[in-house]
Image (cartoon, rainbow, N blue to C red; front, side):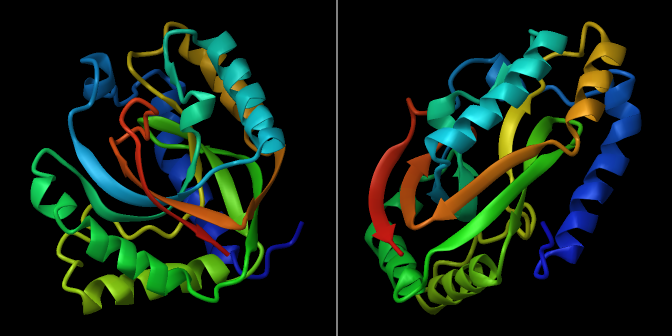
Length: 232
């Protein structure tokens, strides 16, 4: 499928792959220390969309293939699968002052989503970083980009943009499928599985509902607390 709104996004995913591939293919991965150490105590506030059952099942098929190649990595549970619209504040140990203003954050999200139409994201294949494997999402139109811009403006208007885009400015529409927690036992086997899945068709996400949630870095169901739901 052609995505008129995302030629740069395809190049972005390709660049991610090209940067990480030489290291990952030889087993030089970035192991997640928080996952290795147990529950993540940090919290953030995030606007997310959840995949429907059919798309989640396709995500799980990719995970099955990757875990067959390396069973020691962390697969994102089905309950935790999501696509991030925007992190309103990035996960941190010092989250209390932010959560004291959760009503203001919710008001910003409500303003940004008002009168916004539902939209679709097509998921095609995977990309990688040294720390994770991601399903590549491609919005069919500019609604997601417009929503993010409106949300940034609404947060800024309420003085809530102090930690916005702190790590990086989010431009993708990905869903994290797997995280590395130890070096691959058989790097070549994992590399073959990754290469075979790079362009697999996965399905579409119809974004007609968004959730504002308190979360840890992994969107773990044990940590997620719903704050508000917005219907598009």
